[in-house]
Image 1 (spheres, helix red, strand yellow):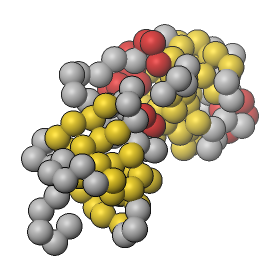
Image 2: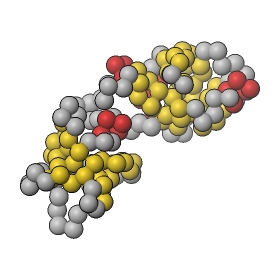
Image 3: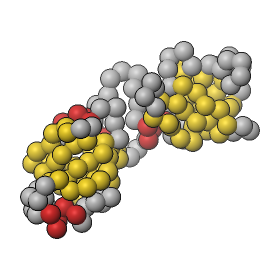
Length: 162
């Protein structure tokens, strides 16, 4: 959780011939990436000249990226943003912060395993918890009872069949 940068998307292609890039955002909405004046690519800051949502992606013009040759070199590069400039609504968490948390059964206090991955599905995210067995838990308040990033745990309400 001490990470200064948060990975927020990937450059999937160029856009046009003037050096713009097409970014697939790793956020609930593509508009999340349009609120930053600076992205980080390979750990180096790059000024965002413009960014707009287009068909579920973000089209961005970046400082120093002029022409299609420059933008093609950025293809498949990860876009990161400063954690301190990224804000979330209450009871929302960055995926990178949830992965690695110890999952505890809300009713029994028994350790279930570690949140290994998160599936982003249309209805809601699903936490993949791996321990003695793999458990898939919908990331909704009915199942996720408590998230304690500082303590490194997540308390999960299980139902029969989970």
